[in-house]
Every structure is written in C-alpha cells, then in structure tokens.
Image (cartoon, rainbow, N blue to C red):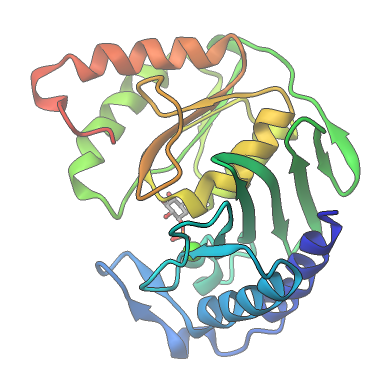
Length: 267
Ligand code: IPD
Ligand code: CA
C-alpha cells in the first residue's frame, strides 16, 4: 500500500542528484547558519504534487512552506525535502529526503532516502524497518559500548549551553561521538547499527518523524530528551537509543535539567 511513497521519494532524489550551481540559489532563513536553496523548494513541490495525487485525502506538513495543511486531517505527510541542507550546499553528499506519514495521531510509515548512496530506509508501524529491503534490527548496548550521534540544534541559540553540557557529560561515557549534519540520516544510522544513541536539544518534526519510526521499528526507544513522548508538531528535543542506553541518556539529561541555568534550554 505504501510502496508508492517509496517510489515517489526515490524519484525526488533525481532532483538532488541533478542539482547544478547550488551556491547561486542559497538564501538565509532564520539566521546566517539556517540556509535554503531553490532545490529544497523544487523537491518539496514535487513531493507535494505526487504524494497528494496518490493520497488525495492527506494533508502536508513540509519544511519549506509558510502554511501547513493539516487541520482536521486524519492523515498527513511530514516532509523534509532535503535534510542536511548545509551538506548539500557544500557538496558533502550526505543529505536525504525524509517523508513520514502520520495517521490518526501515530506515525504510520516512513521513508528516508540518501540519493548519493542509493540507500532507502523504510518502515511501516508494526512491520519492521528495512534498508533497501533488508530487515534492520538494532543491537542492545549500554552507553559504554555506544557510538553517539548528535545534532547541535544550531538554529536555536538558547539551547547551545545544554548541548555543550550534555556532550561534556556523555563524552567520557561513550566510545566516541559523530556529527553528520543530517538528523534523519543519523537516526537511520542507529537503525542500521552504525551508531547506537542520538540526541538533539531542539529540532523540527520533519527532521525526525520518518527516521524515528524507522529506528523504533528496528528496536530503538525514542522520546524527547526529558523522557516524555516525542511531539510531532512545532519543535521537540529528540533522544533515540537502545533499551539500555536510552534510559542512561535520559538520566543524564534529567540531572542537567535540574541545574539552575539549564531550565528551558532543552525543548
Ligand atoms: C538540520 C539537520 C541537522 C540538525 C538540524 C536540522 P536541515 O536539518 O538535520 O543535522 O542538527 O537541527 O535542522 O536544516 O538540513 O533540513
Ligand atoms: Ca531541510
């Protein structure tokens, strides 16, 4: 039933692969570190048209639009046309297209496609996670055996002290850190066993909706950083991990949140 979404996301990848003169269309959004290109808009327009042709009843909640058409919709797509826009601008070839389908208040389906490597991560709720059709299952490890991936929440400057504190507390406990520039790929990398725990103090639903379902279906625990359920509207912190390292991470965050100058710095 959802194979059509995968096909559409795959075709959208062609727009990314054929992009030329990317630097000529770069514009600032909220600040000098929050950038967008004409290709973000082109991919989103393509996804909007094709997804809503296939699912005419569904709404659309995409990064590159001012108004979101989700009011009163039982089902809607949560879309990041290019996650890892800075990587895209710098020709780092580490970006993806992320499409999640929310249905009756739950994530129902997710597809995250890395066009440069041809890796397609998918999951349907209750039916497992897959990488190019191969089932994914995470290994349960404690923080002491974990590679940690993280996002710096750089668009939300008030969160920087909390991110720095969390890194300071977690770094001595884990094997090492990685920072890739695409939250959706980071979380899918956990599903694929390339890393074991992920955190970011504040991100938007299109950065994690599809990937969180993929990780969950591969056996991950997902939540906001204070341990409460992930929120799929507006913005939220994100913690993804194994049955053992996720509670370890949440415990560290709860300790940090009790420090006087950390109040409200994790969303
Ligand atoms: C960003 C990336 C990055 C994360 C930011 C996101 P964008 O998405 O996922 O890794 O740290 O919080 O906003 O702007 O490239 O779509
Ligand atoms: Ca984006």
